[in-house]
Length: 312
Image 1 (cartoon, helix red, strand yellow):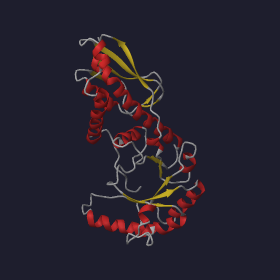
Image 2: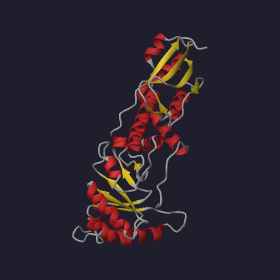
Image 3: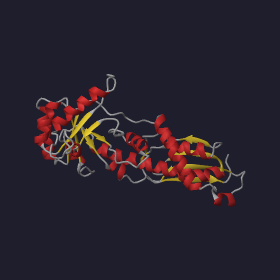
Image 4: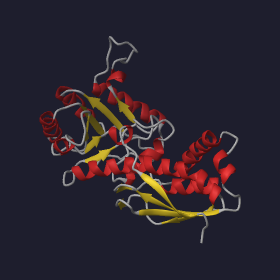
């Protein structure tokens, strides 16, 4: 197995991302004036209790983020978890219970359901891809096709669904694509790099700028043809991305790689969906990147069931 990208768990930088987003979310909901409906109708001393319930089956993700919503909007409220992120859930299953001042719970309701639904939708779709390729050597990876500002949160949800994280950002790895090759060594489109030349230049740059041996920067390169793959394999990239290749061509690529370059992993990308992913995985590639995990996931239906106007 080649070097791996950093995998995202629920950690400090993810919490900080959500804290920033949550401030924006609260601001757009309350607008400096507060919840007018609740202020008009709900007594200030009213207490409430509600269960967060899955309206459909799937995989839950984002419970810590939902708990942060309650803690921020209603500091005296109580969050009682009844599930954990990454858990498969059934329709009607209770995920958590919230108890506290009714006004705070009402403000928190839509915010926490939004984040739970969004992240659980990503986790659920990812799990479908992972289960579809079960038994093959391939792993499902996300991409940078994420909602601006939500990247670490959405990649965390992919992990909850059993997928793997590709690079978090441009800072994390070298990924050479055709647009990079086009500018060539002299910055001219008339003097293109070959994939092998680009890998060599990237290795040189890394050696000059990353002197700490612990800073292991992954070098990945995209190719469109088997000829480009044959050219680049001797340059020893960590990963070769095989762009928009049909399964029969992917099989040829795997055979070419296996003839002396097994230390290089192959990633299939393009044309990947639930109908095609199994055939792609069976070609022998180690990685399959799927932009749909984050850009096309539909939010899981999650709701709040109220127990009454007074808490226990």
